[in-house]
Length: 565
Image 1 (cartoon, rainbow, N blue to C red):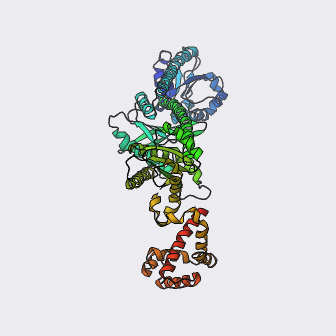
Image 2 (cartoon, helix red, strand yellow):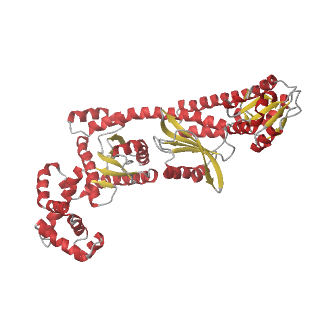
Image 3 (cartoon, rainbow, N blue to C red):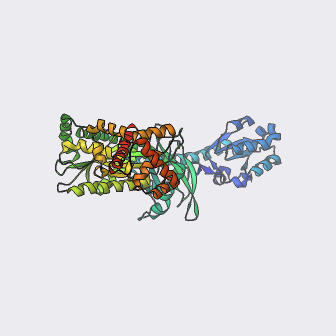
């Protein structure tokens, strides 16, 4: 990928100073790129040369190492030099055959220079051509930088930047945003068919398999993709700022070869994109803090704090008519991890919160909802405003449907996370919204005990709505101690399974055969456990009141154990 920065050996031999010189070995390397020139006065310079150099020397300078030609050529070839050009002088008839053979074996270009052409003429002419090429690159990069900067200054985003990159390089491109989520790309077609059918699926798959855009990807690299049976090279350039990976730019070699200039353009674009993301993050953080202050005041029980929120309500286009519902979104890990790799709930939330919030906002906007969204601890809080004429059933079912759409979209895009949504009741009086917030949190805690639902409305909790009343805490504790607690203690001491057996008993309505299937336990063992449960707890499962007390005791156990966890 050095072509744009210099000229090939073949091109150099067609220029006036070298037209009378000969490529006498290493024809396989005639396409090597010369990016600079150097002159060798003695063999020690071989330790100081670098990639892309054309090394000029004389037979006299090399005469002292005539026995080491093979080693010298191998060393220059390994270092990536473009070639070696040797002037014979009037006293020599040609180059040493050992040198020629060594160059031929490595495919390393060896040029026999015309002794009549001075080094100064060669270096001046070739350096001038190389300089002009490199200057053109600098000019193009500057124009590209200005082009992309103008896009950002005029309010353009990643989509517009992707289009500008395509127009400049003429190869399909995708920009991966790891901070706010999503992929923006351009393939040059009106329908974006190549992008949607071929390129984006590659991005999603690679992210799942290799975590390509993780925090350790800090330099550009090349990879290969199979696109419709054709192996296509891809250039990946990270978007970095302050040693943090914000995303990645991916360029596919579908239309034309990728060169060094393309890499430099992507690096320039990466800098502009990083600045755009940092700017967006700064704005987002200020807005997020302001929204969260508003929500904390509004959802407080303190009347004076609520009044502060009402003073700012017009900034969020909220009205007191119609009423509100509070939704709380919890973010958890959706994949097993080793203990030394396990992320805390807060770590996971911080990694994905911006992206998930963007998805939530997209769903709510598509639903034409009025809302305020904020983040607190390891959860997302949504204040949803209902229309003025909303009926009670609609006020309950509509947030549930919205929640289910949010879960579906997040599941599809963020495979490492699992979100659960708790929904509080609808309140017309905004001063009662603290109740809806508490109910949403209780729905999150208690809803998973009786079902696998991911969207739980407080109204659907049944008897839990009564049992989670804080004013009943002492009575519930006492009831718990006298019903199922003895069985819990017995399980802990004797390593029995009375509590799981009792839970299965109520789940199957006392059907012993189904209990045996559910617990993968023999029928007689189930029968024996039930007899011991009655003895330990001092109850009779044939008694409706005892059965009711035990079932309620299990639900209280869920509440108490849930609070502990």
